[in-house]
Length: 205
Image 1 (cartoon, rainbow, N blue to C red):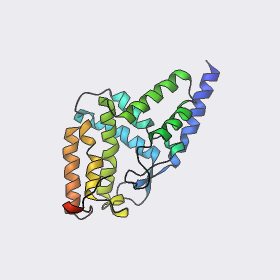
Image 2: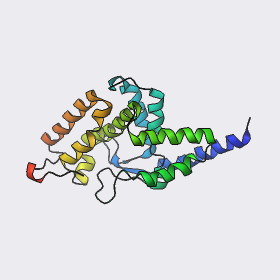
Image 3: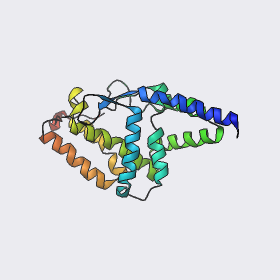
Image 4: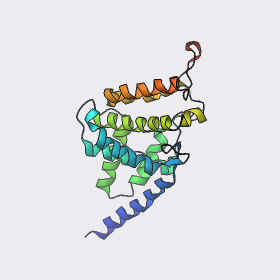
């Protein structure tokens, strides 16, 4: 046994415990408690396993699960940025890349290189696996908000067009799930939990 290697891995495992303390804006289903990053990542992993048949193309499911489990680890350093934040760009990749190098860099070199590569692939969103993983990442909060009478949409006065624009990423990973998601978004307007702007005042980020 390589004790030095094992110690690096244990140190990393201890470090990522901090993910459990990072609070997201979205709340648990039918709840007023905020979800944390660890809960979010676990939920996405299960969703990916359950819903992979709806991917536009066959995926390497293990890679997708790796992506969704590690994609928010960088928020230990970079913090969570609300997807509808009007002050800070949600795609703060440069700041997160520094965090990725520090945190994953705690691992033995081969594992560090793999985790950084998987994280970068998710962020780039170009591969089949990354597109499907990102679809999961956008679908879960949609399900949460519709279960919570609008949730963060109501709390932060988010408009239909902003939600629609952000959630449309889902179709790049799964056209079938996008049909489902689009229907939920439109139903949310009908149900009065998502504000529909007039055509002449619609804006997007």
